[in-house]
Length: 499
Image (tube, rainbow, N blue to C red):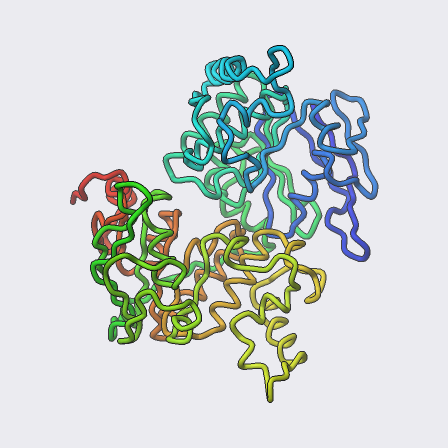
């Protein structure tokens, strides 16, 4: 066995993140690690990568005990990690990012040509071709993922940990990544893959270990299991199938007319966008990241002032209005990037929950602490948010639990209109079930929802109508009841819908 983690326990005071965990990895194997948000997956991998020290337990490599006190120790032992949030320098080239820390030199200076040559050699060796001279800021998220993997390969990694590697990738980029992982495993590299996407896990993994509440509930060969069995091991119960009622479209809530946003260059970010969302419907927007979805969200929510067009919310012209004014008109917003737009990381769970709800919990300018804590506590229970306490800072919550807090906070606004951008990004199957159910409940209660998601299965499952964006325009509109992934993918790539 290449790697053994035996009886690993990690406690933070009274909270046990990992309890007597056993995990192993064979050479050339892809071993997936799955579980609910807060189940202890990332903590276990942080221990393996030297970012945390176990309270008890032992790690062995090639049958010999090792001490991993830092990431540098892990790298020395040929263990690399690609984090969920990329750790690249946007203004550096691909080659500069890949060789950082191990830069080739020429005299006393950095040899950029040698760095580029080494990057090209790595790309050819592992079948992951990149342009060494291109700046990371100009790269797609899929290309950035590839750069991160090449970086750990340049460090000599034989064991590669991938934390939610497909969370921000398009369907095509996901397929390319899974092919690349299989190819690297065939060359003898060993992978530990943390993911919530069980269908992807089933496509690529050799073995799967499931964690629940910090404990292993099972380790199975991928060929001997299925998505339903894995879901049951993860959440401890059978998932409920959520059905969508027929829409009963009411009066218009959002009207967008001829909306345009100019970019820094000659190419517009949004071009003559027009659509509407009515009471009792979910309008889904699909598209490859970078085709104008972010600018559309920001224009509607007040974060970006459009150059042309009109946005009406409940018959109020809110074009270019401040964020506060638009929210006061009846908008709630689950943002696409929870860290940049959704939370204050240094604020507590309670303080983050209070955002947008302060007026409801004050009298004569004084906030009701007990009322606020009761409200947030109800969300914690209802959405299964795992946190040490309501006083825990947001930065110490797992990404999925943070997402659940934001979703709960925005749904609790009970506004007529909701923008739900990537509402289930990084959450487990149990939380996804809850969030999907809540969105459909809001729609059935006459709410209007604009859903933006990179997950086509989510778009098809929740939407009544589907709009597809391509190069800043609406490339087509489909009825969700008859739309297929193939039709949507074709429009996403700039083709025309057929059938």
